[in-house]
Length: 112
Length: 112
Image (cartoon, rainbow over all chains, first blue to last red; front, side, top):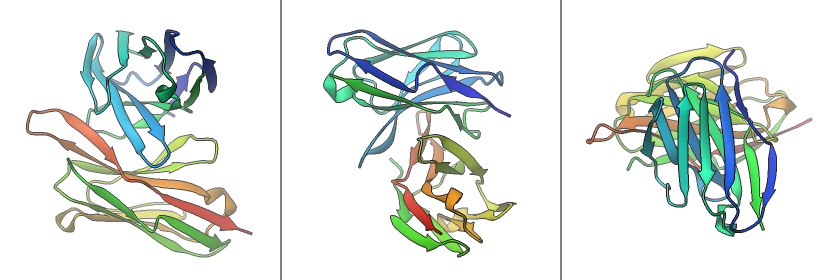
């Protein structure tokens, strides 16, 4: 079974803090993705990575950066958290870029 | 970008009833995936189905790519089927970049 884990289920941070969200997959998948999910807006792609140290912007990369130093780990970084980044963050991985995506449990981030 | 429309937006079923969820998409796609999001936020990949029909227990899905729609069938529904069902279509852009676009979902409530 594919297992994708995320570092926290719930996180509360203050405006201006630097925030790290970690995602780890155990299936040797080449591709990893970060999405955010908001009521009325659905799931939107922030960034994805198709190989170690390789990344591409999704629909809404502003205010975020990513890091992939090892194949199994993909980090999402909020350089200076703002209240409009309060959201559910979902990580996913896939073997092929256009293959089935498998999601982690999500991190519900609140920025106050 | 590709538009993905799901219907109905909300559905209430008595336990044991059958249902059909629909997903329409606006352009040619490389793949189509169905997901179930449980009440705790976890997204589970149900089907990877670019075309044809697949079955998994009480669930089955059919994609007619030439007519740009997919159907998800749930038979003998159970309360554990409650949650939101998402359709997502994957496509490569002219620039060679790939993206999975999600619909807004169908919220299913199965009552005892």
